[in-house]
Image (cartoon, rainbow, N blue to C red):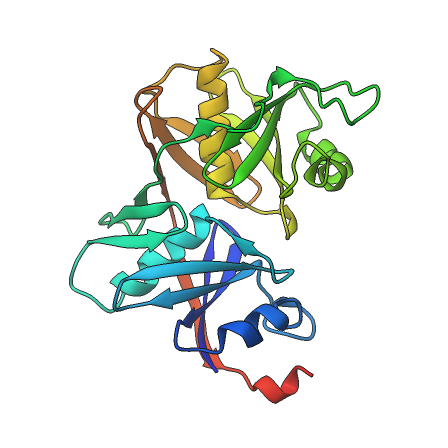
Length: 266
């Protein structure tokens, strides 16, 4: 099975054409993504050139509605074999436009963030977690995110509380979990426990959801270019209005190409 390995801010993916064996990849995702006995990745991206489109298979074999860093990688993958600098890709979040800048960074229209359709958390504690010291805001991007703004120890909190919050009863389909710190210069320092993956180097939808939550809560203003500092590097996010799309810009690069043998994964 031929593949390309891409990364965006340390979030790394196995990119495979959609004519590959989808059901086999879902069943063997954990083994293929294993960094010691497989290729190593946070997930698998199934790509169609004809549409063009993408589907996200998480490391644990579950299907995600969307992956922001993955979308940048897919855009880079498709544009690398094209003279065009822009492309529109069909995703679980709808048709999203992508543009490659002259420096190689990919700008993506991520669609509209919104507060969850379920009884949304808006700076409130999770009732299912006894004696919680933290409040959360729930944002769909369109995959679910549960965001808490804290003054310090965001990485430690994401690692310690992420697994419990991901599977809290408030989230029947599980949730991504973000702990964010707003710095004096307006930068958001962000650590993400990603649903189906774990503590991750970067999360594009998480960055957009966190900026939206910060705007809704009045911590920053709509229309600002916000630097989101993740363990793998920085993204820039701009949400012009409360009903406007999130525009996200960041890097994506090809690491290597190759093929693997399905009979290696029993």
